[in-house]
Image (cartoon, rainbow, N blue to C red; front, side):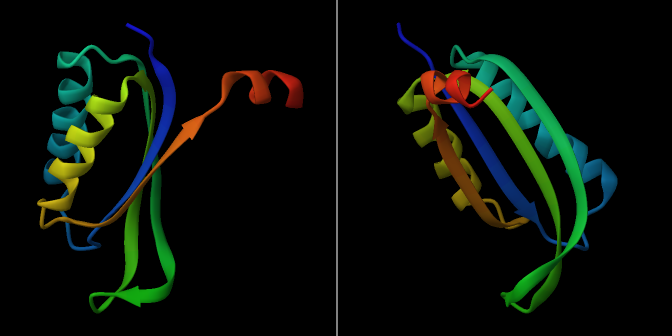
Length: 104
């Protein structure tokens, strides 16, 4: 099975506790790994001010995940994020490895 490189950034509500934050990160890491994803790297980008308010929130906690998986894993991950009330936005981008090599 061929795996693509993806980057998913999601924004949590600012009132989410650290325990909830860590449990969400661990849940999504386990979800990706359980479905055959590899090289999962999670970076906490911290609390940042939003450019515009999203559902009456002006701040958000940013989490970035880089991983290798197939498209079905991304679909499952985004569906799970869509129904989670603690996540106010998410975005997944597919990285082209050949273009990344040429940049460096």
